[in-house]
Amino acid sequence: MAYSPAVQELMESLRCLPGVGPKSAQRMTFALLQHDRSGAGRLARALQTAAESVGECRLCRNLTEADLCPLCASGRRDPGVLCVVENPSDVQALEDATDYGGLYFVLKGRLSPLDGIGPGELGLEGLEARLVAGEIREIILAVSPTVEGEATAQYLAGMAAEAGVEIARIAHGVPLGGDLDYVDAGTLSHAFAGRSQYR
Figure (cartoon, rainbow, N blue to C red):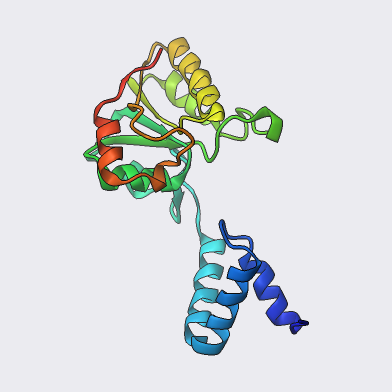
């Protein structure tokens, strides 16, 4: 069936979301246009505002509208402990499931040379600068136990060793190939509490 250009554009735009295929995009489009025009307008405004105003924290690379995210700006966090995660959603998963009181560094991915993702794409020069500054005494690796996650962990372990910083990794209660933001809170809390030295 041929849709009007505006309807077709909305369906195609919704397909950029993870897990949204052609049928899901079609259902969402019809639901917004047939039953919830005010919701569609609110969604459009929220997307526009977020796209224009949300950037990354200058220290941890988490999503924020300010120079520093609320966690980095807080005086209550331990600046000597740094948890390295793959995605901003991992920060929230750990905050919800654990009593971790340190800071974070968000890679926004993992090393994958075949996909053209190297240390520069993960912002590791910023992490290296923080290590060289000498304030960090421990790094906790909270990366996914995938092939790329393991390669990333190895690389980060080398950086930490070179800087003389203690490095640990969360316990492997997280399933192989799993993403932190999909793991239940109990498993994530247990894995985080049972972290061990990374070798």
